[in-house]
Image 1 (cartoon, one colour):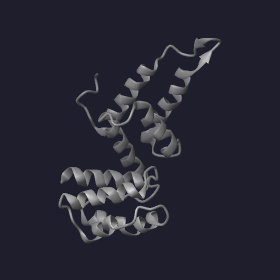
Image 2: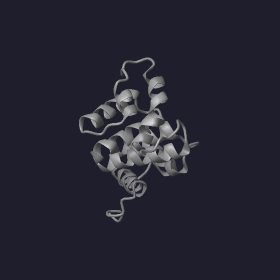
Image 3: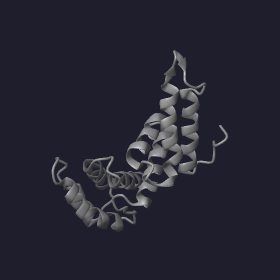
Length: 170
């Protein structure tokens, strides 16, 4: 049950940042009901039609209440706290190897930007560094840094963001 609640929290957090769809939250609400997690408002969310159109408006109306009923956190769209939480969700996905290091940096660059939470600054800088590593000047690599070097830096940053201290020295 705890896993289903964690997935619902993650889906709701990412949805508040707009990089995921309402259908992701609706699907995880259904998953919660299947494993026995229940609340009146969660049932409403699970019943929202995931077709394109007004599903986001409908979800916006009910999500905060459903999360409160389940003792989960609601992050208003565009909030700094939501950005911090979403960044941690994505860092955990990298550490679980469901996304690649470059995916994490490009996500941070695209959805958080330099104007967002300062927690994303190192990842955004690493995204730009990937572009330099991929560059060639006069037929020679622009830098001696490799993609593998950057991947290691991104993984280290993800561990820091996720609070994983077990392998920070690797």
